[in-house]
Every structure is written in structure tokens, then in C-alpha cells.
Image 1 (cartoon, each protein chain N blue to C red):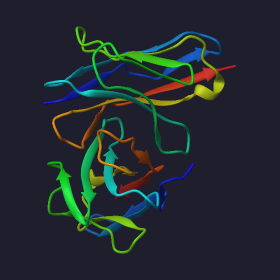
Image 2: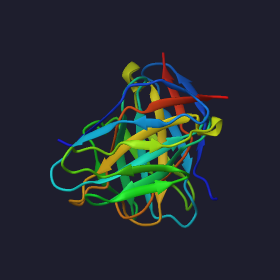
Image 3: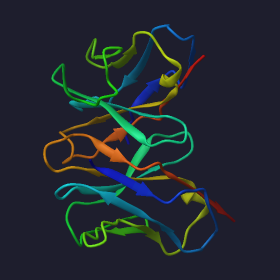
Image 4: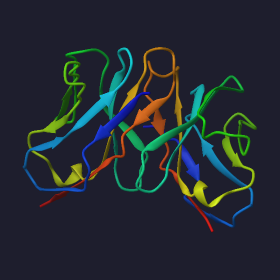
Length: 115
Length: 113
């Protein structure tokens, strides 16, 4: 079965640094998402992206966050100036059609540690 | 707002034991309900879903029934296997146009031989 690929699997950064988390969605998918899970807490929605635009975002997704689909295959999440509380597992997901009607395919996540 | 509460783990069972993982939800309107599973080293995968009251989702021997009267979607399996060891997430999505999945915290299941 096709997979969503995320790189790196682990990222360690210093507070205040910029990080870019990368995702390669499934090739014929059109809808893209980022979620995160802080240790011991719920998986939380960050943002959805379609047709090169953000279609929905949560209150967590403030000006420090941005998403981009720089080419036909990658989907990235940038955190401009990381904070300690950004430490979490970040999951990318994609779907062929818009949720809720279509199943989401998730990557295995990037564990971000901010020191 | 919408939320999902699932039983705290971890849950440890012997092979062939009966599994129940409780999940209750709070939502306006009529959400769709899901169970996702994450096997070690992999991404979350959709296990089963139900889109309206009294629907039963099933897959790989797992079942869950959408109970509107108790706002619940408990996951059950009659006889677990070692290969079922994973983290299980209950989730909902509101049918009112949002694309946002609302998850519970996840329940880690370990099945011993």
C-alpha cells in the first residue's frame, strides 16, 4: 500500500531556531494535514491544506507556523522560532478527497525535541 | 467544543483474551466516529469507522458500535493476538464541514503470548 513518508524521524533543535519538517504525501492525494502529539496528551489538529492554500487551521497554528508545498511532491511544516512547548511528535497526513468523507493516511511522525 | 475521552492505558492482555477499549465523545450534531491504530514504528492507520447512530464498524476482528444514547464508540475484539499490540486512538470528525479529526489520547495495548 502507498505510504506517507516523513523526514527526519527525530529532530533536535535549540530554542529559537527554525525547523522544517518534511513530508512526502501519497502521489495522487490532494488534501494535506499536519497534526501533533505532545507527550502524554491528545493528538491535535494543526492545519489542512488544499490547492496551495490553508483550508483550515487550529488556534495552535499561529504566526510561528507555516506550511508549503514547494514542488509537486513535498509538503513542509516550518516553525520559525521554536519554543520548548513545541516539543512533540508531528504527524503528516494526506487524503485523496476532503475529510470527513475520505480516509486519511498518516506518516510515522517526526519527533521534535526543543532544548 | 468537540472532544473524545478514551480509557487510560496501558492495557496488557494475554493472547486470546477479550478486549474492550472504552471511548466516549462530546459533540454538537452528529459526528462520524473512528478508531485509528498505530503499530510500532508506523503511522496511524484507519482501523474502522461509523458515520451514523447504530452503525457498526468492523475490521480485522475488531468492532465498534456508534451509540448515540450513551455517546460511546467502544472498541472490542473477542480474541486478541500478539500482533494486535499497538496504540489505539478514538477520534471524531464533525459533519458540519470541518476537516479536523479530534482524537483521544490513545491507549497502548500489549498482548503477551
